[in-house]
Image (cartoon, rainbow, N blue to C red; front, side, top):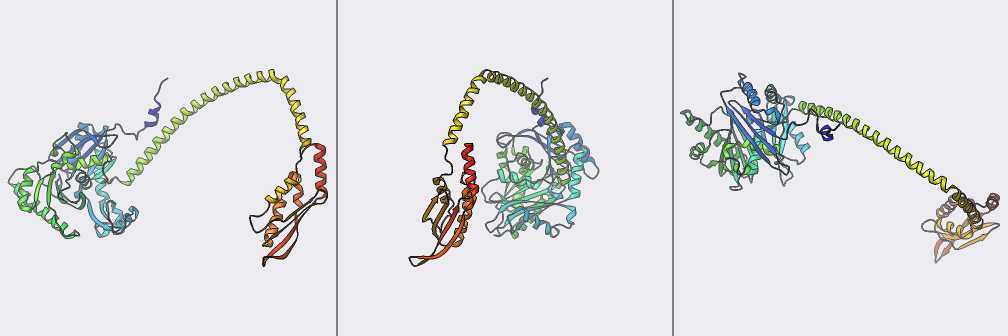
Length: 511
């Protein structure tokens, strides 16, 4: 029976169905999907781009039905889904906070949340994105305050279409990712005005870093070419001027933007850009630099920068990444993943046990065969081995008889080894086999003599057993070169037990 061991490890209900990702954006009258495949070394390949427009509305449920049909038509359930939540339903603030630690920043934003939004903390999902660490020790932070009901409604709309997103991204963060990755280096300070399906988003970047963002809900068809388009242009110019004025007042240097770039989810922005140049009083142009994100693949207006920024986030190619997926879904996904891992672990463990059992019996058979072979050799060599063993025993007895453990040199070496590290010396060593040993010397402190005697007693084992009787006889004050020293004597007498041990060792021929 043949099977793939890799399939046991990578299988399970929580595993992605394919290596492709669909980035899904939808709102009133607009649904779009960018399908990509991340590259191993970074970046991504665009597989397809699908977009539909219609008179759908979230209030009457037509948007939900349209999304369900779109998902079925384009087989989105086969991919990992990254959904994009529009900025107009979310509150964001650009803040400067006195910390560069993410945990401290999160705590500061949480404590001051009610200053920015009129909702209770338990009604909000609060996250932040560290935009830049300042030399002063502060940080420029984008704080995101999303009402739980808004996020849950977005999730419910996706669920009705049979989709469970892996992540829920924010359109503003996606725009920031695209602008930071592909935006121009000159001029230094510029703005991106994005005409989305639900309104206007405007970002100001300084040295390709986001320093200001604002979203305005505006229900306009940006591709319309009717009499109402002039009113739309006037309203758009008013909102852009107001946003740029707010940025200029809040900026540290009081400087405004030098250039405004336009992009849209679906509309051609060339005409709008030209019409607004005179009304706003700034240089305007379409965001043609979006071509850098897809060199040679599509015109810049073929894809919305929101989807391109989301693709960068999904491929891990940007630091502008914020996931608004509710915590309950994170927990459910972790539990599902844990169940899958437990199931996979059980299967792998069963296979491993079977393989270990087979290896065990094979190894037992090999060992038994080897034992039988060695036993045959033992039986053959046994007579010769017995003769050798007898000769070795005789040599051992002779060696024990000529061995002289516990002689005076070995005793002297042990005594010297028992000296403490400093402040004590040996002047004379006296040894008599019948009476014992006397050690004379000088020391600076009485404690060193006591330590010396204790060390000798501890060394009194085996052939050096007589050292166990070491004890201090006296310590007398003395002087040497007008400095106080102390003379000492340590006696190590021979006891009857030591003599008995010597006789037994001699009789037995052992140490």
